[in-house]
Length: 231
Image (cartoon, rainbow, N blue to C red; front, side, top):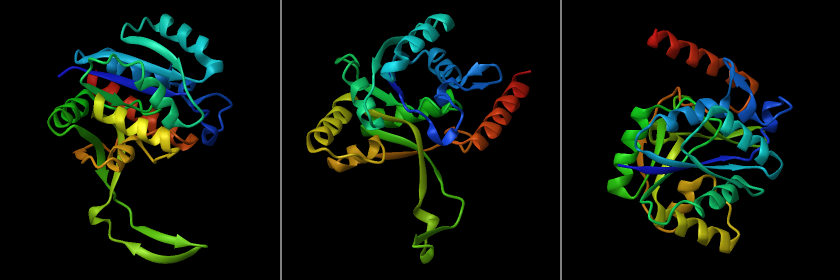
């Protein structure tokens, strides 16, 4: 089933402390954003990609897309102050006749075609679906450096992206949140807020988001491992 993708890439990545936006950091000679876009560029089910960038990086992003000759990047639009606002700006320019739209972090370049296919198939049937993995670590609720409670992790999942929705559903969710000034933790939380059920699809522990400098070490290892598998 065909889908569109919105990729918010307007964040500054302050926790990375790299001096540049994290989507421009290079992994094995290519910017992180290139590794991310490669996945969707090569997926025959992806009809198009909407990139959302910061106002000051729009020209850099346009030059980058032209340099790498990405055919599926249909539009590049300016984002908002918050990630949620940037996603909404991207959703507004997805063709209205699109059925499914995926929302994916620019700094999550290790998503696979298999995971996308499972996610899309689930969202086609349920209307909304997210990738997630069971939490492996013990989780404790802490207040003022004191443990208040140890949380039962058997029902806890760490949510990833892409998150997939029927366009009409996620647009309604974002529109309501925007009108009410509500900022959610992710796009699925906005959909849950309007009473919609969100299905879980088993993700991949390698599908990490590059947030800190330590993540770059793991990311490089993942890419090297995958290159070895292809050799």
